[in-house]
Structures are given as C-alpha cells and as structure tokens.
Image (cartoon, rainbow, N blue to C red; front, side, top):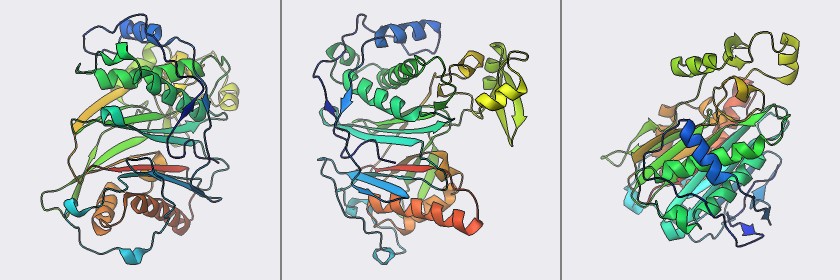
Amino acid sequence: MQALLDNYEITWVSDNYLKFKMKKKDSSFMLDDDTIRKCSSMLDRDIMMLSNITNPIQEDHHSITTDMDIDYIPSNNNNNNSSNSNNNCINSNNISNQFHYSSKTFLGTRQENQDRFFMKLYENYNLTVIGVLDGHGDGDASTPSCHSIIQHLYHQFNNKIFLQDCNQPKFYSNSIANALLKANTELLKDKEMDFGTTATLAYITDQNKVVCGWVGDSTAVLFRLQKDRMTYKSEYLTRDHKPEDTLEKERILSVGGRVVYRLGSYRVIPKQGVYSNEDIKKKRLALNMSRALGHSILSQYGISPLPDFSETSIATGDILIVASDGLWNVLELDEICKILCKYSNYSIKDLSDYLIDLVDKKCIKDNSQCDNTTICCYRHH
C-alpha cells in the first residue's frame, strides 16, 4: 500500500475555494437537527480534486514511514538503533525539535492496509492537524474520506468568511464536524456502500490546546511529561464509540436498530425482519462500533457520523499519539509511558518506529493475528 501523503504538501488542481452562502451563527456547536442542516448547507458544494499525491519516503512490504519537520523538509534517516537510547529521561528543553511529529503505518497480517492518515501544518495559523482513519468492511472508505477531509480543511483555512469565526469558542470543533460530515456526505453518494471508516482528527492550536473530534475507535492519547521531567502520565482524549454504551444503545434502539452480541463483541444490526441473518452475514451488516463514516444501510439504524469532542491543554515535552486500534489492542498505556521515558532521547520518528516494531514483535511472540496499525506521534515544543 502507498501512504496517502508524502511531505504533506498538496498540489491542487485549482486555487479556487468554497464560498459559504451562509455565515455561521455566533453560537455553541450543538449536535442537533438544526446543526446537521446547517452543516449540510455549508458543505454541499463541488469538490476539488487532489493531484500529485506522491509515494512515501520509505517503503517495504510491511510498513510505510513518513515524517516531516516544521519546514516540510523530509528526512531519509531511518536509524532506529537501540544503542542510541539510555535509561534516563532528559530535560524536555534539550529535546531536539527538528522532527516534532512523525507517523508510521504497518500492514500486520492482513491482506490489505485499510488505515489512512495525514499530518498537516497550517503555518499561517500555527496549527497542526493530525488525522487517522481505519476502514472496515469489503470496500475502501478510508481513502476517499481522507481525501475529502484534506480538501475540506484546505477550503476552510482559505475561506475568509469561515475564518471570521476563528475566535469563537467552538471554531475548531465546528471545523472538525464540518470536515467529517462532508466526507460522510461524499461516501453516501454511493447508495450501495455497506462499509465505512473511523475518523479521528486532532488539532494542536497556537494556544497550546488540543481539540479532538472523532467517530469510531481510533484513539488519541496525550502523554504528559511530569514535573520531575522523568516520567509520563497518560490521558485519553477520545472514548471509543461502542454500541453497548447506555446512551449509544438508547440512540440506536430509538431509530430501529438492534444491539446484539456476536463474534465476541456487541454489534449494531438492522431492524428485525428487514434483513435475514444470511443477508446480515453476507452484507456484513453487523458493526462493532456505534459511530462511523459511510454505511448506507447501517446509517439508517443508528450508525452515526456525528463526532464527539474533547479539549485539553498541552505543554512543552508532552507527546500526543493518535493511532488506530492496532496499537492500543496490543500495548498498554503504562507500557507506552515507560517506553517514552526510557527512549526520551529518541527522535519522534524513532519513537513511532519503535512502537510499531514492538507491536509486530508482540504479535509474533503471541502467535496472534496482527491488525493494521497506524501511529501518528507529535511532541509539543
């Protein structure tokens, strides 16, 4: 598989951008019917096409690594020699900021890699955006969704009308919601789409804030460097959307969907009598998450594209990891905290490489199937 982006520079077919026909009201973002109509009105526009999406910096049969620094200069350094590490954490002021974010994706034992990711720096706004999508089902929903999100972010941050609201409290959550709903609208143009994708976006702002919006189970975790400058403490920024959660289950049941326990997890399936068990199995109409992009059928029975949000502060030396469930299903948070401490003198690229390699080795040791795994790491500076 090829990485979606190399060097994260997008060459656009046109310099034109969307013109919103209505200005967003100065109000808090609410996930209600009015908001859905408002977002749809703003987002229902012609889409520009991406071009010149290039190959990754380094690729083999198993993994793809991409990284960049604040000047968009890629590095071909792939050294992950453990001899460069030591057992003591160093003062974060001494950490090199040459590469403060990096990403890596790993096929695992799957036939194809359905993970997609991007990391984008909007220098004019001192804003870093990280996105991770984990596709599921028999089709490819993550690639077009990733393209659509990147396009829409480009339009947003080149639109004077949209940017008039940049000082509003919900500006970033609105931006995330608009991008995800736009991607979902594009996916559902295919009426036969019985597959979908997770999507998690993390904005690191110039106010030392992290704003996350997500659907599904691609998790964002902030590892805070403690006052002793030697240890890390983890903090979840997302919560997996699971059908068995009380509020999610109530919402699903209210629109006619069902929540059943099958194949080791709770799943959303259509209303009784609409599809036979054979059809449900054949069409894979049993999803183990309650929110996602896509799913022309299951979206009628409770699978929602509406994101949840979180916001928190971030300080120098803190490390943000946004990753697909291939990472979190294998490594515990305490284990990652210890790794970040032990190898604190590693570049952020080497840290992401190390985590991916550790996932691979653990799966081999346990003789277990290894899911697609994508890691995006960011060290605040």
